[in-house]
Length: 275
Image (cartoon, rainbow, N blue to C red; front, top):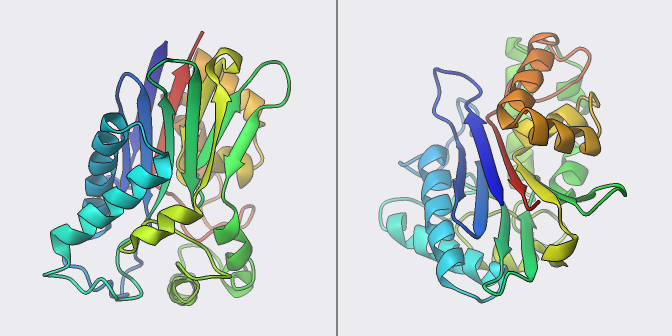
């Protein structure tokens, strides 16, 4: 068994709002939802604090419990909320939130369990067939209703920045409610809406966990297939996946080829080989 990971902030001038942690039998990736300049969050700690605190709390919970992964996530959300509910307004629509991806191998080693909440990605390599890709696309489906104006504007322009702020404000109205999308924030009940499942460990050759800043090479840019990403991670490692993603981003700085809210995003990739 071999584990490799890499993570890189969108900009050296900003904190990395992704978290990645591993143990001998579990992997956790948390991707904090960044708040555009000019928007309030109701929290004095910030997104990076929330993502890193949730990630470390969750990694501890998932390795100390044999219960369902969603149960560990629920408890971790509740624990982190208790750390700042007396100083911050957790009812604020912009309270820090994050996506979550997890893998855990059971104590007997026979099964690998997975969980995905929001738009981080788990890719399972079960053999020569097409990889199994797990991604909660509710954020994307809701966002598609509102992003046309933003996507028509040149990235990096003041007009695009303002449209991005409006877009994020609109998405907040759909966060953690029926008919919308679900993320880790202050309400532990969000964990009940995570996608979960398992695969026999004997069928699993490898698995990848990607924040959406790393998965965009496939699902936004279309410059690789999931099979090619697995081969790249196995051969040259997560650092190379992030390098190629950055190369594509730099080649399209204004989003004319690939419209997007952020020209660069925090990128995290973990590769777990079972062979």
